[in-house]
Image 1 (cartoon, rainbow, N blue to C red):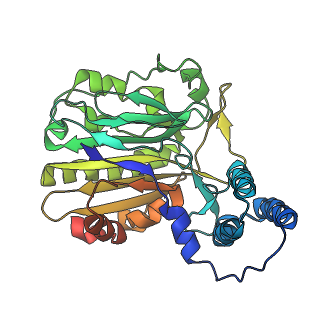
Image 2: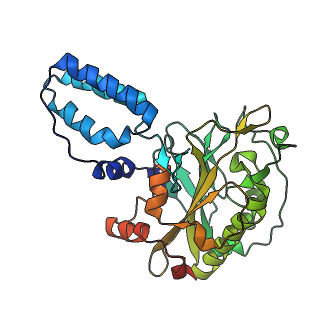
Image 3: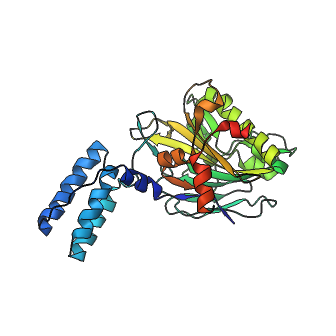
Amino acid sequence: MFCLVKLSPKLTQKRIKSCKSYKIISINRPLCLLFFCIALYVAYFVDCFIENVYLCQHIVSSMKNKTLAVIVLLVLLCAGRFWGGHDDGNGQASQGVGASACSEAAMSRDSSSGDLLEQKGREGRMLYREGYVVCFDEASKIPYWVAWHLTAEHVDGDVRRSDDFAEDPEVADGPTLADYRGSGWSRGHMCPAGDNRWSRQAMSQSFLLTNMCPQNARLNNGDWKELEEKCRKWAKRYGDIYIVCGPLLYNRRHQTIGKGQVVVPEAFFKVVLCMSEKPKALGFIYKNEDGNRPMGDYVNTIDEVERITGLDFFPALDDDVERAVESKGDIKDWM
């Protein structure tokens, strides 16, 4: 069993490390609770609550009344800002849609059977396919993320592309073909059809709309497609790779398409892990817009993608291996 992704406490930990030390003064309990409420209210609007987690922890730990401490912690959790906005690396606040859902592990099972991944989640709807697994958000009607194990045998399959786009029968109020029709947005695969040529069923399931997001057509047929093709080359070269990808949403009102109001992501992420030879991994961030740039321009470390998405990728790796592969992102190592 191989763990692909889970919610990461690293996001909070990294922000805590960047906080300055605060001197906590002794105040009475009612004032302490009032201070917390005011701080939370202000932090919600200035988007800096995470930066104050360090202060919050010290104040809570200083309370002798444990009941009051529990109340304060509940207030913190209800504020919903522990897993809120993150910097997308371009000075904009963004939120990985997987950051508040599907917290448990994605597990790889027998890679030769096509039953590749298993994942349990809290809020997302888990959809198990022959070639991939989806953690699906029924509110936004796009995946939180999609994960799969790509092997050389899968790449060498001879099943032709089916193009049988279909609504998912397992999701009653999911995205529809009508939502995309005339929208100006492409039906962008998360797990691509080209990765599912080894099985007719896997190929057909790759065209379910729950495996797709509204995607810029030029991105879909250009730089994003180039990355998909490169992943297949890596799978053939190294024997197999692990992939997780999904949409990113900025902290703002999102564009939607169709009567179903399918959310249009502002960007996409993809992480790739190779365990053959010396373990290595790469992360990628693509804005959902036209682009014709070298692949290296999209490269990020896994650590950086984790910071943006709030997810912890490949947590089953030994700690030393995980730190090594996630801190380095050099596409030259893959060429």
